[in-house]
Image (cartoon, rainbow, N blue to C red; front, side):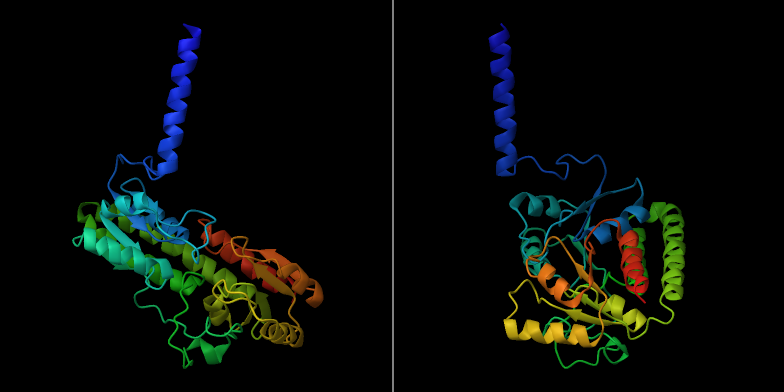
Length: 305
C-alpha cells in the first residue's frame, strides 16, 4: 500500500512538471477569480495595481528581472493576453509590436491602450552609444527617428502614464469610478511628493554626467539637465573604438557613478569602472518597486557631488 501511494504521488509530480515545461500551467493564474488587465512591464503593473486595487487582477507580460531586448512571448502568454479585458502597452517597446500583431489577429475586439500617449518622446538616444540628455536634447532636438522607449524612468512622465491608466480604467468600469478616483488621487499625491523631493535633491546637479551601461535613463537625465553617457546600445557588442570614445568622454566629464542592470551582459563594466574610478550601482528600472528605483538613482548621482 505504501509503495502504491509513493508511486501515485510520483506520477502526479512528473505530470505537473511536464505540464509546466510545456506551458500548460500558467504563472498568470489560468482560472482568474477577477477580471484581468494586462500590462507590458513591471512599473506599469505597480501603477495599475495602485489604481485598480482589488477590482482587477493585473497580468504583466515581462517577468521581474527579464531582459526586454531578448523577450519573446510564449504561447500561453499570448493565450492569457487574448482573454484579458484590456491590454495597456507602453507604445515603443520592441516586443510589443510582435505581441500586438498576433493579439489583434486572434482577438480584434481586445481594448488596447497606449499609456505613453501625450508624453514628449526623446529620439536618438539609442542610435549612437553616447546620449547626452542636457537641455538641448530635452526638447527632442535630434534628427533621428528612433524613439527612446524608457519613458517611465521619469516622474514627470509617470504622472502622465498614471493619468492614462486611470482614464481608461474608469471607462472600463464606470460603476467603481469613485473607488478608482480615490486610489488615483492618492497615487498622484505620492508622485507629486516624489517629484518635489528629487527636484530639491537635484538642485546644483545640472550638467552632472553619469555613466550607464544600457541607455535607460535618458528621460531622468532630461528632467534634471544631466548628461547620460551610455556604453552599450540595444544589447549589441560595442566596437572597441566606440567604447574608447565613451570612456574618454566619461573621464572628461568627471563621471563618478556608473549604473548597470544585471539582466544585460555587463562583462566589460567592471573593467571600465576600474579605469574610470567610478562607483558601480546596480539599478532595475524595469522592476516593480519603481519609486524606490527613482530614489536610488537620484541618491547615487547626488552622493558624489
